Image (cartoon, rainbow, N blue to C red; front, side, top):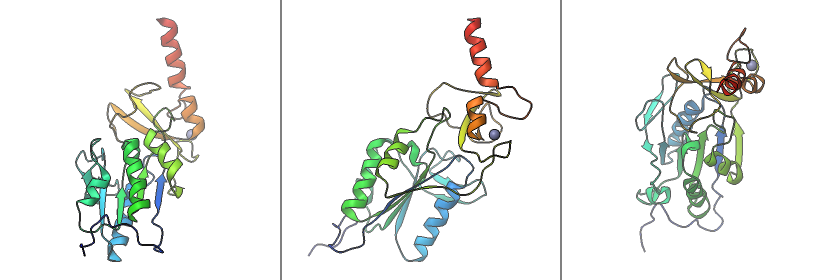
Length: 225
Ligand SMILES: [Zn+2]
């Protein structure tokens, strides 16, 4: 009767769609995998959308540090993701890069798309911020996802241990407080990010020969005030 839209209800007996969350620290290859996954699905004739928020390029694109890139839809806080998919003819899957920066409501919308409309959702992002505190959207993904995968591409701390957590470095010192989202990359900038093992994130040690910098300095500053 009516033509199938992107939001046709899931027919009974159809394979359940999935919500998967791939997480890891910066530099672990999340955006590269997001682009690879999009490529693989397209090759199978599936139709999808690629979404991102605050990509390192500063534009509505998914870019990876190894030089790949693709135009993408920027997920503004006000964007209704169910509505977005409904505006397309047929959508089989979504690639959601930088999903840690989406709103919690948008994560709920992703779950709706999976359960009610049979859209596969592959979300990629950081789990925790520079303080090692979980992003609200990442937390919701941990709670709702069918599958959660820590990415295997090894990122190493300067000491050689696996890099697990992102440190925010402001003017050469590790920050412990501040806004949860401040855009920066792992390059050399006034505000940058560095991946550390848990031990050195907790100690605030950014390199060999450094004392447990941030923590000591911060308490020094407090006592000086
Ligand atoms: Zn370390």
